[in-house]
Amino acid sequence: MKYVLFVTVFTIMAVSLFVPQSSWSQVHGIDGTWYFGEKPLTVEIYDSGWRFSVTNETGQRADGKALNADVIYLPSENITGHIEVEATIIEWSDGTFWSRESFTGPEPPNLPE
Picture 1 (tube, rainbow, N blue to C red):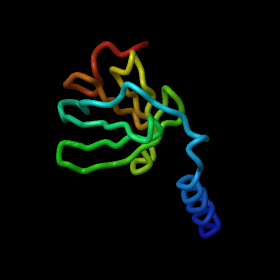
Picture 2: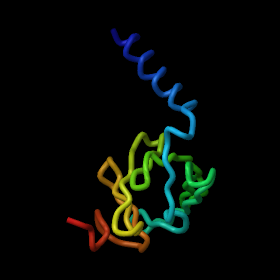
Picture 3: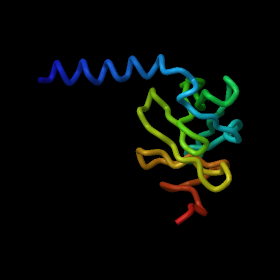
């Protein structure tokens, strides 16, 4: 049973790498500097908005895809992010946030309710 589950999950992940871009969407306005708390991140959009890359403060890079104009996916972390407040906050499915401004505490100020 564990083997079947593993193979199924692996197959789904492998197939998702080869899904044509037309099944993804485009995202705009998220390029530039973001902050995870006080730690800066750089987001760069490429492939006409279909994909993006994130570089953290230590220089590590991760690539992501746009699911639609408001939702992005970061496969290396297996999380989705919802872009809010005119692209000034990204709320991730793991409960963390990125903000255009540095912040202290668990979440940035001025979150939508």
